[in-house]
Amino acid sequence: MADLTGKVILVTGGGSGIGAGIAKVVAEHGAQVVITDIRLEAAETIATEITSAGGLALGLQHDVTSGDSSRGVVADATKRFGRVDGLVNNAGISNRVPFNEMDEDEWNRVINVNLNGVFHTTRAVVDQMIERRSGRIVSNASFVGLRGIPLFSHYCASKFGVMGLTQSLAVELAPYDITVNAVLPGVVRTPLWEPMLDKAAAADGITREEAWAGAIAPIPLGRPQEPDDIGEAVAFLLSDKARNITGASMNVTGGQLLH
Image: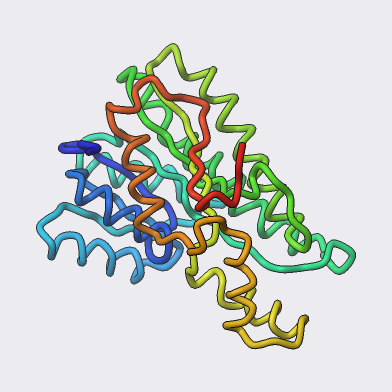
């Protein structure tokens, strides 16, 4: 069992979906959790749920596309808990768009959140990890960070970028005993999925639930993943049990991705 007792973990995009699941799981494993989200109310709601269950948590508003915002939440987290031991780069957005219909604004919107957001938040926290010669960084790269799929070219490009950044930083930061890894979720029905299911249903002339059934059909285990599944993988990578794992990608796809 991953033991995160006394560790301070910052989770971006923690106000809903996979991020909320990660925040709750790491809290259950003993971590003090800083939940950040573009929506302050959502971050505070998850923080309240954790504290009501006996944990320690802080909810903060955070725009991951902004270096100033990222430095601000790290400063607030450090002021409250003294340091940040682990960072979970989870904040992300997606959209189903044929490449020949994609405009520059749509491309930049996804890249800015999914890739630049990982840069800004990691850059904001890494100096204190280097100074302490200790730290854990885990990024949500998605299974499409290793395998491209149609109609999501900007999303795939952003997640491939996260994988490259993860591997590069794993080597660069290893001398400071900072591990850098990625987790690859498969199909998890979060609020991110709902508008994409609407588009898929409309395009194929089927219902939303039929579209969802089609999404989970390729999974060998025959079931989608849950936010807690991703949370447990992240908790392990943040723990001392994973002290010799860096530059790795943990596949949590029910067998949909083999690598």
